[in-house]
Structures are given as C-alpha cells and as structure tokens.
Length: 87
Image 1 (cartoon, rainbow, N blue to C red):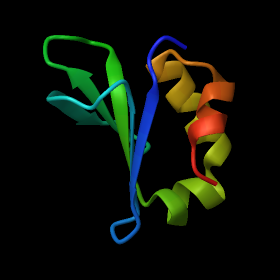
Image 2 (image 1 turned 30 degrees about the horizontal axis):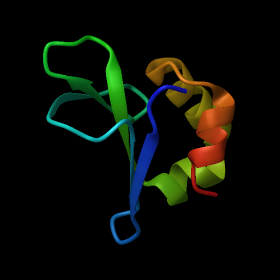
Image 3 (image 1 turned 135 degrees about the vertical axis):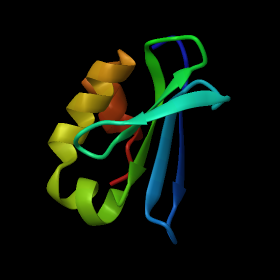
Image 4 (image 1 turned 180 degrees about the horizontal axis):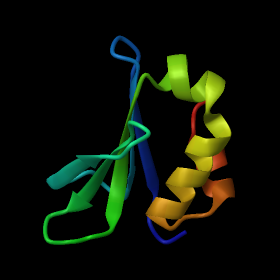
C-alpha cells in the first residue's frame, strides 16, 4: 500500500470516514447501496468513502460486502481494509 488509510468515526452520528491519504476537498456521489464515494476534483476515481449507519447497518449486517466494495473502488487489498476497518 503506497498511501496510508485514514479513518475517523463519529459515534453520535454512526458515520465512518475512510480515505486513502489525507482527506481533501472532493466531489461526492452516493451509490445505490448508500455508500458515499469521494473523488478528487477533476478525477473519476474515488479516494475516500463515507459510510452512514456504519455500526447499525454495515458492521453488523453487510461487513463482507463493505470490505469488498472499499477494496475494489479504492484499489486497495481486502486485507488492508480488514486490518483498518473498526470491528
């Protein structure tokens, strides 16, 4: 992995922010599963994801899907996602 995975979790809102490298200004778009992907301005490839209802929905019920989507869309290994994603 060339860039560090940075994670921030807001327990009151149950929102997890995950980015490759330091978060920066970006354009966001929500996919059909509810994940909010963040692209650098002028780029088509996401570098970050915002996960709403992380513990209530994703961690408990859809973790495998989430891990694979993050790995695929952010072009990082499944093991890197697993190591960094809160349990």
